[in-house]
Image (cartoon, rainbow, N blue to C red; front, side):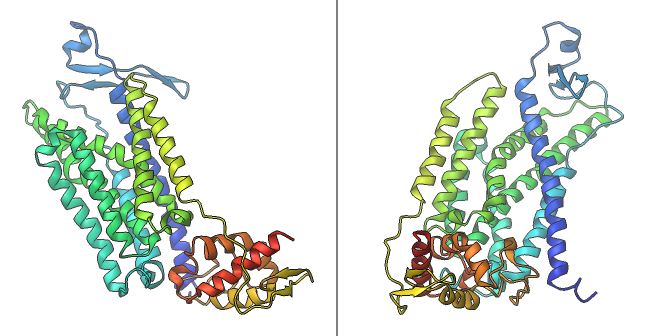
Length: 416
């Protein structure tokens, strides 16, 4: 029982909640994509037809799973309220709740390791958590306020304003928290906007439509229009959020000196690609949008590519030493590199991690033996020398000389 309530138990909790978050996220985003596609794909009935007389705005015939479907959308509402009416809301709520739980499990319970980078800002754990929670709340309040101004009547302008504000939040966060934590909180902020749309606008608007029909009154179409606007916003938010959900696996993005700008460019590419599909569903094919999106991604990939290092001798290391196999190589020996890795990396990357909050080696990368160091040499080089995002928040204080020495060893070994 003691084991289950320690880091091992937290890791299982991490796995199960992450799994739930993925499942519910697929359900929510899938529904969002489907209904935007449906809205853009339905065709109005012929004037004077029975469907038109019933108030049907459009319909669609589809075949899937061996059956035919005929969804219809009413201009405001049907004449009578159906007995069995399905509400799409729990997908959104479950996704946000599980995502919020992930913030606590991964980041807030271990804020000193996962959120704080002393080279960025010297924060306490409480301060870092406060910044994170404040970002979620503040992001929603600013966004919701803007949506209630005249900007709501100009969707393109509102979209640009929101993009600028999200990028500004990314800039502030990347200059306050560790790169990984900054990225995930930008995503959590956008996710909070999305669930706020569902909780405070879309579902209440739909309830007012239903309540009006229950009273025998004609529903006010304004509620449906407001809900539709927020639903479209959520549709454009999805690709940036999905990118951020997986960003923790790609340190080349969040560890860059201009990580906020990298995120902005990738998010913009996602919005362009999403816009192409939304237009395509409405019968308008505009290849310029995906071309621009792909070009933007390619530009980012080129811009952040690590520059080739010039071969230099490692400091304070003999000019030629032998590696574990007896090969001569300029720079450090494997034994010397192993000493640095043991001191700086093995507290986490070990069969038995000693760093608080870790029950197993992150990513399964263990560096206890010289053979394991050689096996993972390319990863060590990428993360410790090129990206410099490891050790995590540099908690073990790896020096620039040590990074340079590892780089010299790797490059010399690669040329043998």
